[in-house]
Image 1: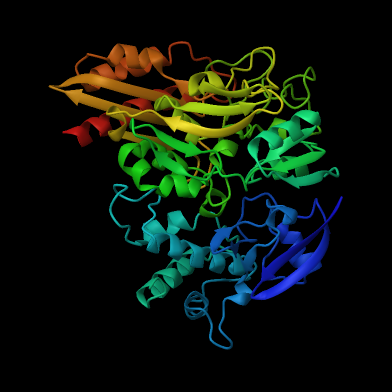
Image 2 (image 1 turned 90 degrees about the vertical axis):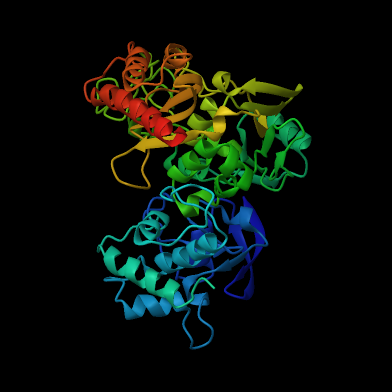
Length: 172
Length: 329
């Protein structure tokens, strides 16, 4: 079954004709050529396909594109402002927070979304007491980023990069 | 994936009517479980009626202290809600213990209640499974059943319910509000999920076309002193081997009120009525907590690989009560 949808992808309005079975991830990669979101497990278990959907971090492999008609999507390649990288992207570079780099766009989108959640005062499972404003300790960063796997095991530097991005004001 | 039609529901009644009219139609919420099942070949709907646009994304504190959670409220929004964090901490914690940040931003309250077992044999269409293909047999009973049930299982199915949220809702005596072809009805959470018996293909008591529209949390004094504890193979982003949702109110050293539910051990969230009965009015002591845990697991039956869960459940139950008692002092 075919459907016509419109997506705003990294600031650009895109219209496309898709089979209803198409996931948002495949629509981005195969139909629109936006390959920043990566296909890892295709089952919502690895986080490589993470983007910001209407400002919130989501996996794209379990969403049907037809259900996202009209949505605004920001992938890792849409985070920079011209030649100026997003503070989280810059921090990943400075801390060598990757090895092969395949999970990195998902890690970065997830971190950007996660920082927004923390800024809004949302607790995590490891937050002591649910009512106080959370402080982004390393333990908090690990828990909040647990939906993004890295087969190279670059976790130590990923945590360091996010910690640094926070200290440089990525949350403000 | 088999081809399907897609429609956005404009109102709840017509969404129900649309699904009722097509035997293989289903409702679509966040899709985090359903779309995966469609890809795996476990589910083959021919029509998806998307209900995420319906006006069920609100959390309302009613005049009588009841909190009404719309079925479309995303798991992340429910966990972060001020009222939930303050009055029902066990629910916030259970939600935050489940899945990942990305998935919680998609998954809905109604969808979470309907998520299906993570039994590997259920998800593998090349092997028999009575839940996926009734009458074909159970591959788990004599297979690798480390993750499977120790209470309430049948010869047809030993799968467990994977939800964390539903375990907390069970301890909280929530009510599920359903709109069906005959109108609206209220189902106590304890009656919502089923034990497998002879019909493991049915996870819940819902019929075709029944749409969850809300979940209600009763006003509760004890719920403010509650916690969720989850034991899993890694520190985060894994399903429970065993989990405990508990609320404890102690006065003058005695248990005034207590609510306990266990997850990861049965086909439905397991309300620990025996443990609760043995604790109510009793001295809040380590010894009595242990006795309650033993009473609750007395009928537990291990399969070949999951015997460790019995001791794990007892210990987890004791530990939660102990930490709630320490918090109450």
